[in-house]
Image (cartoon, rainbow, N blue to C red; front, top):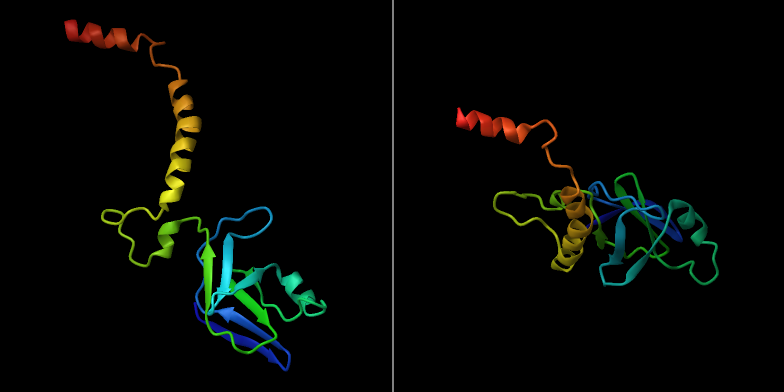
Length: 152
């Protein structure tokens, strides 16, 4: 994703991602952003806007990049003016929004192969027992009525 400078001071640069993020899964402790990397593959710290504002006053980490999500955009703060592209990994609420031309009739659902076992396990442990435990519909003699109609 390309980033644009939105704030520039002699020792402070703030960048904004040019692309809006899809609706992300909200965890209690952070938004659904897994990782952010710069154009060289270096990991950028993920935090909040408040952490970003106080980061510049820390002794050892004041020069580190820090990224945060605000609205549907990602922002990165830095002391260096060399950032142009970032790589963002997210967990979207609807993964089909990440592919521009998703066709459900032709394309596979974008679920990594590593997650198949987890999804199957959740289905078998949570959904199947509930469906098996549902009462059958024989309380109103519904089966007997159909048999009587067939005999007549």
